[in-house]
Length: 332
Image (cartoon, rainbow, N blue to C red; front, side, top):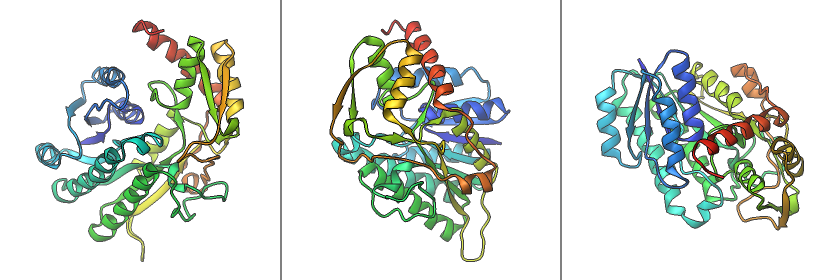
């Protein structure tokens, strides 16, 4: 039996797929390798996964339903679970290319749900990626999965919240066990170049200035990738059961439960790189929030999960990977 991982060439998807392979699972990976950021990084991630004989990859766009259905039919009796990590990421980019988010995050999620419903008879569990962005303009800190999430401040956040609602409906109507995971600022090796920690590392290393929005008065719940993968696998292994008045659908936060001021984050990064940053300050950006902070009580209670990695441990490990990856490719 196999686990289907969508977004297998993405940051979190690649790490989840590798962890599944390491524990002896067969993994079927899907990704469309879109050019939101350099596809060479996505291909390099795939090359890491292709070292494992139990990994199979197909380049597919989840919004193309016929292609996905054909793939699912081919492997229908082998797929026991789906880890749906594919999405169009990025808060600010959603202001520039909104239809990309509708296509990837809404249509793509619906295609996954319909595929699970009609074409995967042995499906035990669908785990999918949500985001801390769904908390939007909430002022209550820390963010709890019990909090109302009806005030998104970006299109990206709205699409991820819509995915949660669609999954709730499919769990209610068709009994598909599902778990949505709200990720909080995930960082680590093989990460996304558009994320602040990666872009800051690039800039500081090259001697370019970095811009801190809201005059640097931001706090983020930075969460190490290996901690996140541990949470994903714990969720995958615990499909929710229906309860009276409650379909088999659960939501959990995966965050470090320790928001970090951006200036402190930069200071730790400077120390890891061995070079000072040239700081520039700018006002708050549309669609952004001042602070993210995960309440992980439910995650710890139900999944036995707690993060273990501080930025003092994680950032030097990321910087070491960054140097090695860029050096092998001749990138300054």
